[in-house]
Amino acid sequence: MDLKDSPSEAAFRAEVQEFVGAHWPPARSAKSEPTTNMKDAWDSWREALTEKGWIAPAWPAEYGGAGMSVKDQFVLNEVFAENSVMNIGGLGVMMLGPTLIAHGTEEQKKEHIPRMLAGEVQWAQGYSEPGSGSDLASLQTRAVRDGDEFVINGQKIWTTMGHTADWMFMLTRTDPDAPKHRGISYFLLDLKSPGVSIRPLTTMANNQFFSECFFEDVRVPASNALGEIDRGWYVGATTLDFERSGIGNAVGIQRSLNRLLSSAQDVPEEETTLDKHSTRMAFADRFIEANVAKMLSYRIISMQDHGQIPNYEASMSKLFVTELNQRIAALTLKAYGLYGTMWDTKRKEAQAGGAAGGYLNAVQATIAGGTSEIQRNIIATRGLGLPR
Ligand SMILES: Cc1cc2nc3c(=O)[nH]c(=O)nc-3n(C[C@H](O)[C@H](O)[C@H](O)COP(=O)(O)OP(=O)(O)OC[C@H]3O[C@@H](n4cnc5c(N)ncnc54)[C@H](O)[C@@H]3O)c2cc1C
Image (cartoon, rainbow, N blue to C red):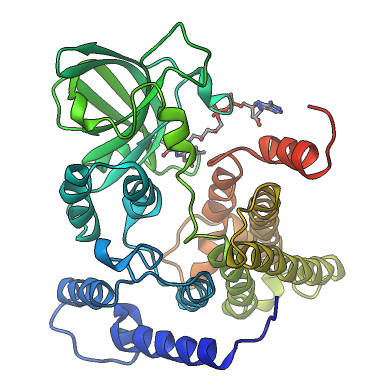
């Protein structure tokens, strides 16, 4: 892969940069541009993205996307990440949308895609259960047919923002006698349905990020099944995310290192450990690793660009980036000395105030979306050909 932009990629990069400067609300307020109020600024950001098809750039234009090439998505994600632009489509656009486009009926697409892009409906992912995380195919939440409906009983857990979501895409067991990967069906469920109860769970970083969801005789129309009944495992497996290749995370890592270096100036010099040999060595190591993370992302982009589907390569990138984030969080604590243990993010030494929370938050990503051990298993078996 050529690491330099082609002339057309360079032009696209400039276009995205200009777009961000003109529309991204924090960029506008940094330029002290008058905006009537922040809500209007965010609405106009959404409108501008919608006009370009950039909320879901990989989707075909007929579904509101931009039909963008892999390389251009890479440039777009990179510029967005450099400017800390947050994705506004949520899990719906990121995960469900591509699955709906591939497997949904015309009615399902018409009902869900426009509302997803307009941000009117927030989606949650109902896969994990108390006894089924890494071994997801062992899931037990039952859906039993009753005429034109299915009746759902069971529990989901660790559901990201489940307590604020409107709808859930979920995996249920419809045939308990079939081998475990078969007999699973994929449903779209309105979380306001009677029999659904959701409780937020508090993470060790003291925020309510995910939740547990209980289903007691919840009725869902059979027409809300996505794909064939009992073939849901294979529908779920096609939820391939070509838009988020990890490049955003890799760029984000470089940015947080830069920010750490510059914001450490806000802390009285004698309170930091920046002059210590071991801190300086750690900084150098993290900078090298940040570049390795970027190369792993480039490899994935390059594979996708050549029509290949990344397999153990995606595991390598996920594992490396999420564990590197933990090492950077640990370095942040170390660099700030005692200030690193402060919880109060409103202090002048705001970055230091966030260090303790950042350290605790950095753990999540090594578990979500497949734990580090599972990624290592994939690399060992599929990448290195070691026995299972
Ligand atoms: C922040 C966050 C957000 C999440 N959001 C969602 C969400 O929105 N929707 C959703 O459905 N789920 C979500 N999850 C759940 C996540 O997918 C699971 O936590 C994850 O798959 C691990 O499953 P588990 O928690 O059941 O752990 P287990 O699978 O029980 O694993 C426990 C430990 O055993 C290890 N282990 C398990 N099997 C093996 C093996 N074969 N070889 C070696 N080690 C093994 C694991 O690595 C882990 O250390 C989220 C999790 C987190 C942390």
